[in-house]
Length: 479
Image (tube, rainbow, N blue to C red; front, side):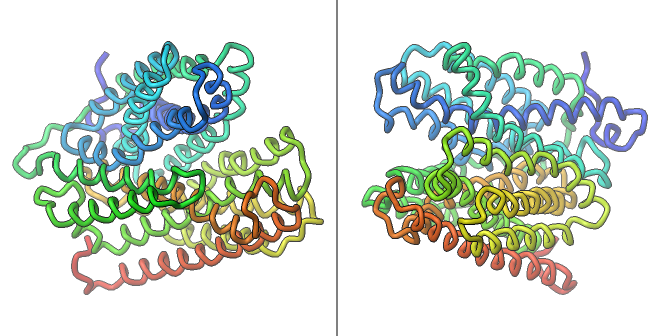
């Protein structure tokens, strides 16, 4: 089988419509698998502590190894795809993801499982980054928003499906099944990508900068140290966390100083559209993590719901995001990505404000309604924001810019888990949230979402300010 030749032909020739649909299917499946990998392992941690006779602190590295690999490498693999060819690298990522899933499923020791999960995370970084980068080569520019919405939908479905699918597989076939289920899906995604994704373009190497090994290592050290500083310690920020944070700052300084063949062209941040989009993406992801950190405690402790009902209520948010992803893309295509980015932020801010004043007596409906507003606003924001960035960049920049968009989101989620968790604990005035009084939990929830609303207002100012500055024709460095 030969791949479809030349991305422009795939995107613009009406006769290629079936090929475009199958290409989008391969990209969607890649996004689904990489997102599923983030959430499906969490539900297995109690089972794995028994299976390997290990502590929770040890088995949590099964989750951390995956997240750290994605976070530290997601920009580097985007740049590598720009240099070596995105189709070739995506196929390698799908192959590695499938092989790593097999190794996870047959692992006989905990540390082999952790190593296989790290390899799976590397593959997921490739898949997450290059699926977005391929949109410009597989669909017409007028349909970029719809395609981005589809990817957002698959990401939300993967994240939401993980806990429930993982629970069913563990109950029916054991913990190994949560990794082995990826194998047939990975093979299917590989075959579709091989057949239908556009071939890599052969371009002269004279204009290409080489792959920046030193910059890659320094960026990986920076991001890895920051991610560890924000995640280890179960919410406390001790001396080790501080040391890791200082190491991240030091490595970031070195990264800026030694860049000669830039992995990330720092001059690009003079483009106010890019800078504003990355900043708002990080802020919004920080706020969205608050729903995952605060929600379970509020529902179980303040509203007194049992675990099964908590799980059902918590699934509402991802379900709304999944249902609104594709319509959000179509709206962004029709009315403009910049305008819809602002409207999405307004919806998130409104939902956060409602939660900040909602009394606990309003019960489950009083929680679900504003959460639905937040998540639908998030779906619109994410789709429109990604579309605004990815639709107007040069082909040789798609990989690294896609990596930066994913990185900003991941860093926001990591920061939100630590910062918003700390705000919730402080606002609840409890040493241990698990034993806090119901009224204290309710107060903590309201204060946390008041802070979240303020952060979204800041994001709104950044987004609008970025658009105003980008509209000025005399600004230097904007391309």
